[in-house]
Image (cartoon, rainbow, N blue to C red; front, side, top):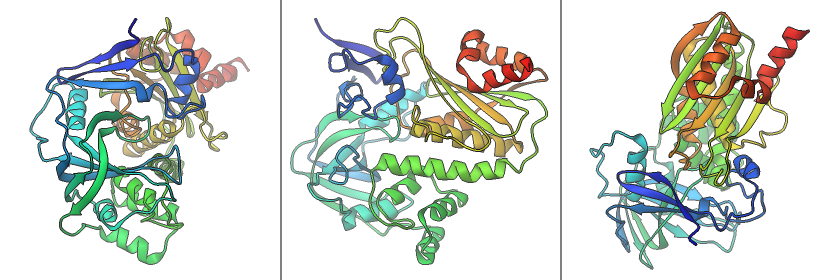
Length: 410
């Protein structure tokens, strides 16, 4: 009997998951881990079992011409790990559009090729890769592979998805990199990595760009390569801490506001209570999503921090916690208020494959106002109705709502 199931259906492709390799692993643990190999199995038996079946197929190539779209440094064997370049093929057309945003992500993914270099010694970044990384805008490249590419795709809760891999033989990068002045200043000033990250973020640099620089040791001290997922989580953490300091100096909101966003098939609901800064995220995973195959009821996971900060390094959430926290801070700064933010995240049916932690930040930060409430209870009811979560479940799970209940009782 086949253990493969279809978890997403789209116009351009279908997404299949082989449940065999993860059989017997507790799904309650999977929704917490989300690919961090807490089960001791590496690579993740869930994420590595995803297959994309494109309607028109993906052409295997040994020569790829296009524009560089980043770099990915592996983490499972760090510091002796694999470096993947990310090249967007010239065949990709930005004019192709789909009603469903996820369709476009998969279409783009089918046109991304990932020549790789394995490493049996601590990672070193060669000059061709460095030119790609430090340029703020994509650079023209031509990559020659020693073997034709394979249509294997990799997904993560932190990094962007990539695929079409093949061993790199030669890489030619055309032109000169475009390096922003503030990056040059940060390098010349010898800033520590946290100061350099904040300087780049304050100058509106993209998170992906800052993360690439940090991952390859090209921004701030200490200057040494690190896995891309560590770099990205570091950038989200540093930038959100920076904004939290700003939020704490804003006036506290007078009422409770409800915000909502549907982004890439995921629902993001933000409850902003008229209280000093706190943050909490509650995730709901419906049965038969990527992490809950075989379950009959939704599974929940949450993380919380007080005004003083998070105490356990967000072990239950990891990178997605810090990216959603940054999104919440950006929302509050945009609104010009301080509040205690409770984020509810729920992938819709058929939208459970992760595209990286960046979607959490954009989903939360891009939420728009639905309504304002004088009563916190009415706001919670409205939030639960927005994504059909039982009110009793929210009060049972949420630390922030439990505190409110205790305060009222006392």
